[in-house]
Length: 347
Image (cartoon, rainbow, N blue to C red; front, side):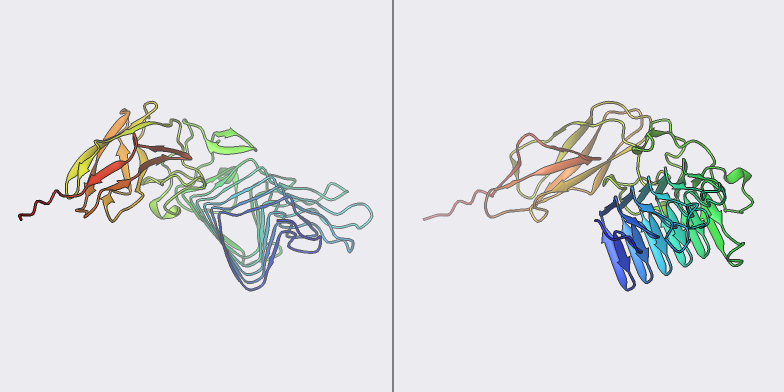
């Protein structure tokens, strides 16, 4: 999406908006470079990146380069990265930028998100610049989120701005927040302040296999799948991505299968994982062939078996079984051929 240079360069919402799997990128505005919300907005599995907020001609600073919230904003499984809020120039005399990733004066809820690589710069005199990840002047509730690798001249990650808004509050749990140990803000329980071990920040914010964020979230801190569509284990990882280091090698099962019977199938990984690995399963026609939603390959193993249940069919049908791990999809050797029962009638 691309927009103008007033407010909400990509999206300007004062009503009710819900988006899933979207990308808001490379937009410019005086504030709210990517998204402005003055109503209610819910974003799920979205990416907000590379947006800029510049100081306006009347001297106001750029704020909320990624997202600017004046209402109710809820992000689930989202990535907010590479956004930049710039301060005033020598000509307009504005203050420093604020909320490189997010600025909120309303109610903000982040669940299972990753916020990294955002910037809130000072003004031309080197002053200001607040909340590279988040500048909060309202009520913010954070669960299972990563705030790491953001920059600001003052308070790199999360600035709870009680100077401008005395009632501002931030409540966080099961998060990884850089600098939280030294912060005066009491964020809440189970807060990490460690390198999340991104694959290649700021461009690839997936977790490496030795990330301390793996399995450190809480069951209600994320939706059923991560930003890539991987099923979330229990407990999930902190941030927008689950860690998957190996792919799928094969999916095998017998075929043909008589309708009304149960057979066993095997899914095999391309390697061995040190933790339990959840592999998604699906059937192209669940009225004829039923599989469970997922199977767990145990830690230290490379394969697992699961059952395929077929239902009686008056005709022979061809059904595809799929196993999914991350963005890798493997189907079995051909299709499950469900044969119709043989009926013999007398003359």
